[in-house]
Length: 302
Ligand code: AMP
Image (cartoon, rainbow, N blue to C red; front, top):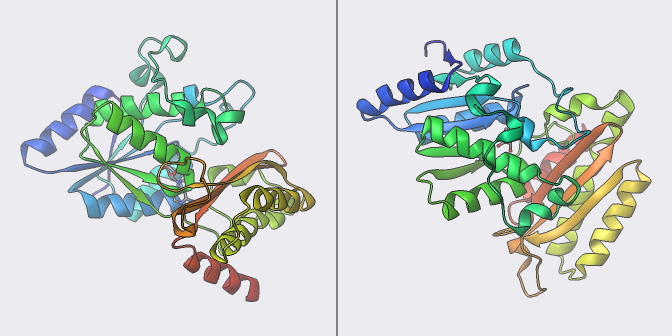
């Protein structure tokens, strides 16, 4: 496959998609904030199987960062990102817009998407406005690239559910497809923010995945006292040097609080923690968690 074309303006992006459409080709969009890793590449690979053309976007979106968060420090590694995408050979175009292409009136004056109550729970409780910022940028990227398919990671599960909600509620004509979380061999979910971890923190970080697994196993075994499970997981994480933000059992379909009558297969366990400078998030569905457990055991034994 030829090198992906790198586009910096919304007009060029639109023109490119128009040409593809004129020859009857479908388009998939993979939004990212760059500092690409195996998780992003797996989504690009998934996109390839869902549409004729794949666009990856690289844009560190200021409106989803709160005051005091890591917007300035967020790793920007465009040359390496482009090299990775070229080597992977799965994308046709990379959209790398300047700020003014996404926020022509400035990020502070931007029209914003206001998301429903779920956006203020879980991660939204400690990151006010975060999901409004995510929705706002995804909406803008969809308006520019007008893809048939939007590819998102299960890693950011609350983001996925909320973007699906936005697409349905605003009547945006795009199909949302999600890809599994790519993990390090020791179970840690791959994330651009893992680079904030010191060596010592990195060696402790897989305890987050282990704690989620423990809750999943308990739910499968019939445990029904979610509060006790959550508390035990938070205590365990605290003991391992994490500062837990939350561990919660929710309904996988819509992230509603379970009423105790759902079968375990319909549940998801989500967590956010601080470990040193890094805010780590992860989640595990009760259904389908088995391969992950096997992977963890293997790495424990190796
Ligand atoms: P980000 O660049 O962190 O905003 O992420 C861009 C997309 O990649 C989002 O849809 C994320 O859910 C997804 N993503 C991030 N980390 C992973 C991972 N470890 N495995 C799979 N997808 C991921």
